[in-house]
Length: 444
Image (cartoon, rainbow, N blue to C red; front, side, top):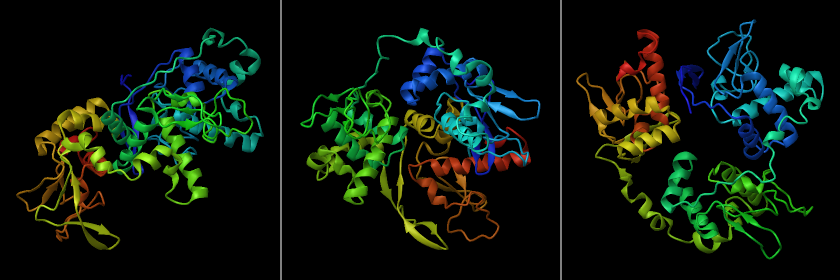
């Protein structure tokens, strides 16, 4: 992973601030493997996309290039800001058809790239005709049409399948991954950890060899090849609703598993009724549904210091034009725990993580709950001392107070830092608008 000298553009509302990007230079066969096995691209298309990427940027996701018409192309597949994505160019004729920042194409995750590629192909075929979509890439026309690719990936082929790297999770480790990497609400985490224990003993590589009907179950959550994924079984009645190989469910990356689970729940609820989705897992019905899952998970979350607080002061949160009282779920972080949450849950680059952890320690000793009154009568809230004079709203009725972040100050007192960083981005943007570029963090 590199930061190098490049900057990533990250959207803030309708504006952009700069952030470093985590990029990757692929090896040729490594890229082919990622496209085939992670993104489920058919092998006859894999060779085309690998060829295009090689002719574009030698497999470097991070590079950009300016065109003669003033537009700019981004990433492994040179996606253009004139039509497909948004950067800091304010030309009103630029389209952003893919509805995403161009910076999304500079990192090692190709999910956004292929979501946009799908839009490019669809849009191109709408005016050039079916089957013409890939002609939007000149490298395809010049170097990568099928007739030239018969032996292009021979060096990558092997009689052995790509190795699957399974993982046996610890119970609390799995809970942490689901909550902080995959942003799963804690009340759902409890159920899925319980299901995983009884289905696979936390082993992502587990395969239940043979059910009574001849089907097999794969991975941490035992997803069946009869309905949800595709293996070597040629039974014409098998569905592959999740549209993925079952092998995707055997590695340590749970992204595919959770995407498929979402479809399982949706499909189940379509015929059994709302709220019944998890009953597709026998272990949920037999072991987890009626169990006290708070007790089950107590060892994992016992040291979190997540508490319900009122603190003698009622926090006020606007709902429409009204105010309702709420209790905040606060948290006292450990230093390294906060660093992990900022990097892995909120995708903050590591060089910025250091700064924000330092600020949080000097402000509130990692306690999201605390507030402090200042000499001018204003009040600061949460881990990063965000001020009610400019940035958020509380019960202070001073008409000169601004609420630039357009949110209640109480949002900064809980364990979820999403609102904190949405407001921080506004603070940085506002500060730089009058102090100059790069000065935003001096607001602290």
